[in-house]
Amino acid sequence: MTEDCPATADIHVTPVRPTERIESIDVLRGFSLLGILLLNIVSFALPSAAYMNPSAYGGATGANLTYWLIHMAFFDGKMRAIFSMLFGAGALILTSRAEARGAGIETADIYYRRTMWLIAIGLFHAHLIWYGDILYPYGVVGLLMFPMRKASAKALIIAGAIIITLHSAQGIGGMFGIREMKENAEKHDKIVASGGKPTDEQKDAAKEWKNLRELFHPDKEKIEKEIKQHRGGWVENLKLRAGEAAQFEFNMFFQFIFLDVLGMFILGMGLAKAGVFDASRSYGFYTALIAAGFLIGVPLHYWAALKWSQSNFDFPEFLGYVASTADPGRFLVAGAYIGLVMIVCKSGILRPIRFLLASVGRTALSNYLLTSILLTFVFNGYGLGLFAKYQRSQLIWFVLGMWAINLTVSPIWLKYYRYGPAEWAWRSLTYWKRQPLRREES
Image (cartoon, rainbow, N blue to C red; front, side, top):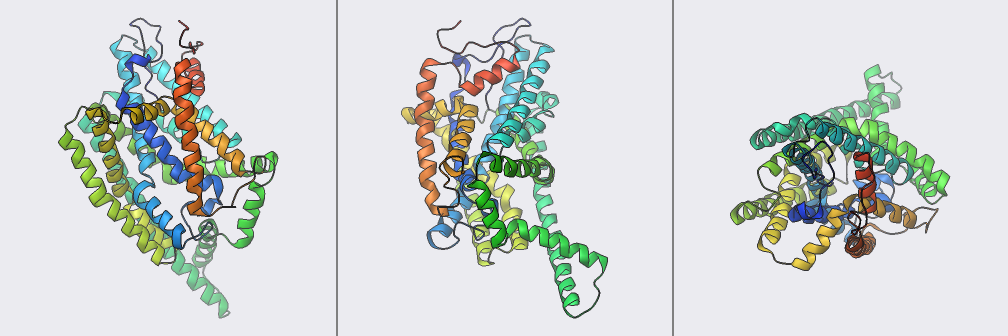
């Protein structure tokens, strides 16, 4: 989330100084962090199945459907893609600056301490605050990134693109597998209904299909149980969160998230080496990114989401339409946002907005954790208990309220302190030394 770097040429290295920060990266990080909440708000406020399946809860018609279609076309996966690429870019900046200043082997010490502490922070966040944590996956994948820092921009971009393509192929393969599973499950039900004896393969397919259906189309009883747990006290939420976090950290991570994060990290390193994130490419280059994203990526994702909604949100059709188009579309749209932010930074316009977004970007970890703390308090039972009390389209007001807090608190904090509180703790743990926090500290 941040591009730490050594400050001296000897073996004792320290974090990045404010004067060494790259404004365009901070602005883009702040922009993507705020944008991620447009997606995450559903997981804070509604039953888990509603995140991808609007018919599960929160409304799937009228304004709610329109909200979901806009969400899918413009934001779903795009902001996280930017955030992931910037994490890869940050790892590159950290190591390249350290090595350029003669840190030697200590570069690896710092990098791996930083990454392992991120895993610990992610586990703390997932199990004690909010299950939808992304820090743990970033930390685990980050352990693999250090040897890649020496590769050329071209090699990194090609490698990242290949991994993302494999991730897409994984989704397409899943589509055919689940369609076959559904067919076998239907055969099983017909055989049982007619008094026959299904094969073991059909029995297994029926059981697997039932489990998948319950995850994606949970019945009313399961939805009501989840709502009751979220509206319960701290202990009830702790128990619920433990199971959700464990599923995310193991099953979901290795099946769906690992290649996604790895590909985006490597792409981020390559794009950083190519000068994409520091606003040093031409206006024409960034304009081409914008055109490709909004003229190809957005229509592609809108079409896929619309077709899936017309199938009554059938699970296999989700893989056929939404999952199969996810990676090419989201990368194009993410590129459009990158191009837009880089043009704004390169041209020097919108200075007040850039300042606010950069402030959020410089305190990204603190803002990420603060958002989780405040919104779990708002929606869970140990706080205001508003879980599942609002429709999907109404959640935008909570997003706007949280944005107002992020954009107000961040610049005020940075007026007096060098880093956000979480960034300060992370740096201190990374360098095994208490870092100065107040601006007047030496």
